[in-house]
Length: 161
Image 1 (cartoon, helix red, strand yellow):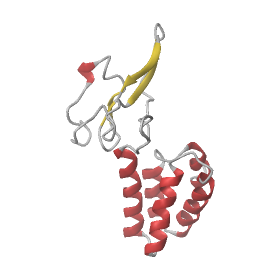
Image 2: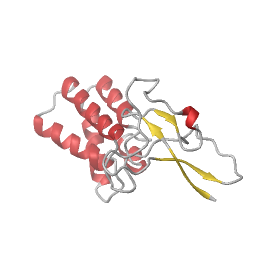
Image 3: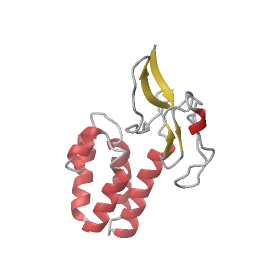
C-alpha cells in the first residue's frame, strides 16, 4: 500500500506535521511558530493537503517535506504561496523605486514563475532583471521570501540556483 499522508499547515506555510492522519498527536490547532490556525484541507475544495508519501513497510522521513504550492484537486494556490508572493511584492513596493506598472508586472511574473509552464522562463528572466535593478538588501529579502514558491526552473533562472 502506498500513497500520500495528510499534512497540517498554517497559512504561512509552517508544517506542524506531514502525517496528520497517521499521527494525530502531532497536530496543532494553532501554529507553534506564528500562532495562526492550522488546516489539513484546501479552503477552496476541502481536499486534504498532500503530506509525505509513504510506502508500506518502508520507513520515510517527513523532515524534508515542503507543502505544495497548489491544490492538486482544484488548482488553487494555497495561502502560503499567495502570502509569499504578496510579501515579496510589498517589500518591492516599500524598498524599491518601481512604478505601479512595474510592481504589477512583478506580481504577475511571480505568480507565473510559481508554476511550471511555457511562460515560466520569460517570467523568471523579468524577475532576475528587476532584482538586479533594485538594491542588494531588497533583492536579498525578496529572494528569501520567494525561494519556496518558485518552480525549480524559475529558481535556476531568476535566482541563479
